[in-house]
Image (tube, rainbow, N blue to C red; front, side, top):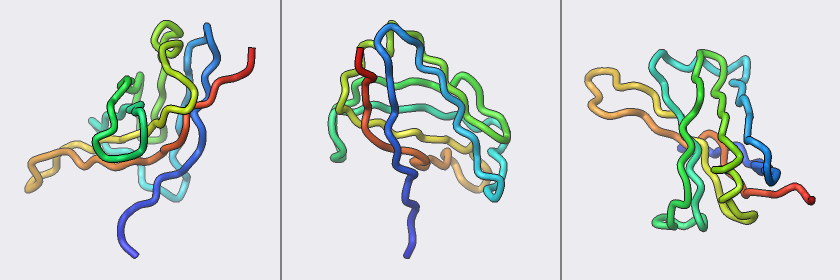
Length: 114
């Protein structure tokens, strides 16, 4: 088998609260290279071409984790049932001319009851 299967888990949001989460790499995985960036992309569906509802850039990427902090004003715009994907973007290493992008996590948006 070739390819990569993302880790599937929900992204849970609470109305009025910032979204703050640190995604830690597994100890057996290699460190994230310097200059790695990352983003969470929220879409209305799982099909290729599904509309993008929001894109949240990572607050910090280190060798060991990717961290997000999204203000509640942005997080409150996201409805339950939408889909998210977390994409790390590894920097260009010659002879490549583009970043290496892969989907590390994916899942559905869930909302806590109020």
